Length: 270
Image (cartoon, rainbow, N blue to C red; front, side):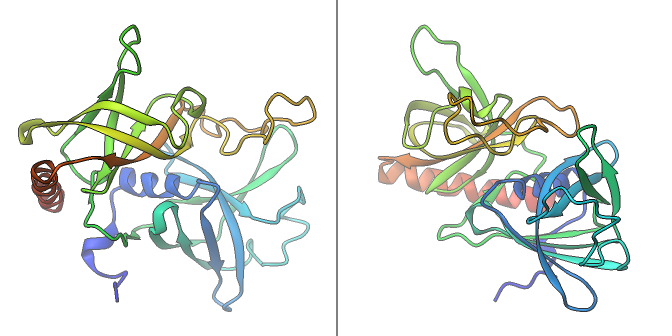
């Protein structure tokens, strides 16, 4: 049983907590908020602001009502709220915040705003040991050239295991390969630990910031409208791409496992 109070899982740096909160903006995240009276409500996290260290959220079934007029959950009267969330890949994220404030947007909609928590537990369960680059001082990169005439696309490595890799890139989702695409001859650069060239199969691509968190089922249809809020904080687009390694041989797997272990040890020292 993994303990959320274990220091291995606790994040206290604002930039690390902001990254974890952005994981929860994925549309497949499941987030429950519980108050001191043990009442629970499903919510959505809309975004996080690194400058003010605040994040934006609202009840999942919110239909444009004014929180100050219809606050059945008591979100504006409670003192402490506990977030228990399951993010992309089964990662468990837990934290607590004080009573939120209400903010209003130009289109008349509203959201709740809370400061970053003092600490946040991020518990990762995976079938293979996986090194996270979130809290690591090491910067690892990946490069992929779709075709000989194309300019290479640069990524930062977010997390990695012998099974697969999570990449971040400053591009909108629409400019990235779709799920099921095979990215051939991707170069992974681990600095002093060396480099690896491998084929990757894309499993999921989703927005992190600076773009809508969901898209219309048929973007060419005039009846479908894009989400009104492209970016709550005016940030440039950032997307996450998760992929599986294809056809690594035994020597490459053994080498990569050593790299994963060393990266995780380095992250723990930092």
